[in-house]
Image (cartoon, rainbow, N blue to C red; front, side, top):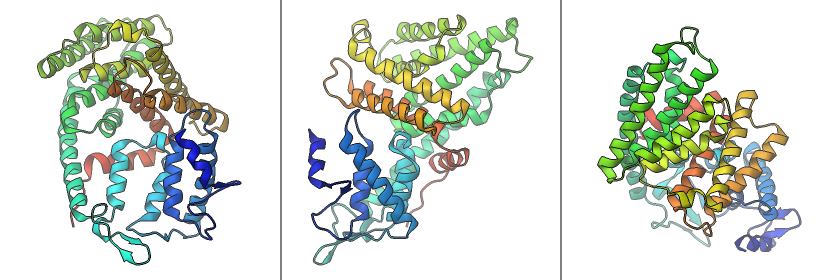
Amino acid sequence: MYKDVLYKFKDGDNFFCLMGETDKSPTAMYNLYRCSQVSFPGEKILEDANKFTHNFLQHCLSNNQSLDKWLIANDIPGEIRYALEVPWYASLPRVEARSYLEQYGGANDIWIGKTLNRMPDISNNVYLEAAKLDYNKCQSQHQFEWTNIQEWFTQCNFQHFGISKKELLEDYFLGATSIFEVERSRERLAWAKSLIMCKMITSYFTQEKPTTCTKNSNETRQMLLNNLLKFLHQLSEETYETLGKDIHLQLHSVWGTWLICVREEKTACQIEAELLVRTINLCGGHMVDGEIISSIDYKNISNVTNKVCFKIQNRKVSGGINCKEIHNEVELEMKEVVKLVLDNSSCGINKDMKNTFLAVAKSFYYIAYVTEELLNFHISKVLFEPLEYD
């Protein structure tokens, strides 16, 4: 197995880059730390590496010892700090990209060997400027979508169900930072709007809403149904116009199944992650036939994702996932999700479809893990602050 190679770099409880080295490289340990977080259940060598490198990197930061023997870079402490503050399960693509673009030194990075040298194929200003241009282009699209989704929010009168614009912003942010490409607008908006729809429906049936919105209110019930039907119709119509695929029946089936669970006060929240995944994948043109859905592989990845997201959601409500016992349970189940997504032996399931399961699971983990202050900071950076050019 690939992980077994790490035993060659382990001496007792310590890990090293070169045998006999007297001082360890912060960047080498940083890369090992990142590697160790993408692990499957039972990979003890990666668990050991994670514990060692985490402690080593914390020591580097607390003692201002981040100078590296292999590299002179723009912001090694910043890279280490981000990795320690935001574990990989909570590191969403656009948040991580923004952090790295602010740390990447471009042509100023210097590699240390027998002489000091630069590696223009790895570190150059063209890469940096191109990345910033792409980032700002995506951000402009996200800001355009944010304006439009606010209009949709007002038209649907979601505030009547006790849903705030701040919740809308957070939900759109989760979609935008996970599915950020300009051309994937439909999937991104489906993600954000689905979250709002779920809140509206569960709010109505659980009576977690203002007293003006009662279960016996025909006006409220009609508003709910109209919002949902218009939402599903819009997704179906846009997907057909763009991709030529009719997702109408599958989309209504998925939401119908979830609605039955809500109405009968069953475990609707326990399958919310799958509802989100199926909606996003259908809007991306990934049709799923009955044979795939009933396969062992699909059931496994769906069940594990639902289970861990439901557990994370419950912990978020009751105080977070940092309780050691719950944290360990969640970590183990997240490892299982990673294994099922990255394992190439899963037959019949499109790679992009599997990646959506992981993206959704990470978004649940993120929103439960970060503080309100950090969440607001990330939203501001990702959605509203363009990168500056030199």
